[in-house]
Length: 167
Image (cartoon, rainbow, N blue to C red; front, side, top):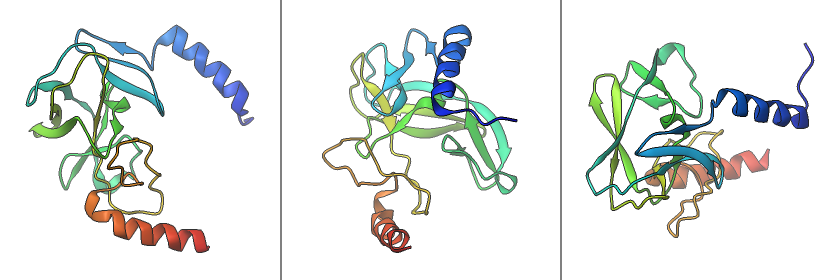
């Protein structure tokens, strides 16, 4: 099988998006659209602090048998979840306007931390551990940590990044 060239992949992806709407979602509360880095989830109405924005459901996967993707959300020691749309497009921020909350054994909720106006991108702090594959953070917040890691992992991430750079 021939590997797709980048330009061809983009062209075909546009066709898939137009015909099947995979990367589009819109209801009365939220919508998926282009963001600073890829796609994001945006408020279509005002959300007040403490208000449940969306319920997050998806495919449940046993953690020990799954390496995960960059979308995977951990539920507990046994289960992870690949979230369905729109939650699959929630982006990280070091200064988030929402947080994840476990609602039931197998679902999460996105809860507003502050007043969120229509048109605002919804985001939460991924709080990942320091690992070799962790990307640089592009959230642009004044308190940006530089990597998509938990605030207690920054020192370890800097050490790991320095070590990886030396290779």
